[in-house]
Length: 312
Image (cartoon, rainbow, N blue to C red; front, side, top):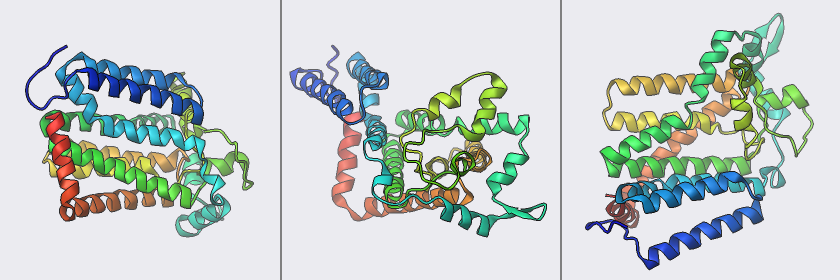
């Protein structure tokens, strides 16, 4: 194995032992909490291959460990359903959405989701589907760009991303909420074992004769986690750091994707407008808190400096 000088984490007995122990512990804990899934082996395989392959890939995967931690926490939420801790908002949230953003349709007030479902077209189904497919690739692609361009900004972006998610998770458990499609298919009664649903995104799958969104939503951690819409939070974080890094016209693309994801969340009946607004507030709050923590805590700044030193 390479043993390059500098800040690299060396391949030695200690690092091999640590990586092996973490890999085994992850598989055992995952099996105990959520059961065995092939995704777990894929994740462990990718981490180990990149860790041992070269200095560059080792630094890359160590940097992206921040996102891996986020994914593991998200996955483990399946073991602790939020509806076990607080009542799920179904009719109340629906009523609030209709009261604030209701649209008159032939003398009847409907939610924006209900209105847009009646206005769907093949063009919008295709366009919104492509927008919604950006919600993870765009942040991860941007993170990869920052990793090779500016390690410090990469860490800022990654840690802000995780902080925003943690804030969202807190709200998920404080205020469990059903998505708009839940009422469409299940009414106002609470059914705790409800499976994920593609809702309006099923039209995208049907249009292209695929099961892409069906396979994605079959793996959802919790149906009752609609408020806030973290789908709506992610592009806000991306655009903020895109502007900070002066990416010019690339930020126009980020802004278009952001607005497209916001619209799709409502159009596809995955989120209310209130959920989207909550997601935007969650992102802004996370960005503010991260910046405050960075400026107020010397310990946190030293942690980032040490982390940057490892992946530099």
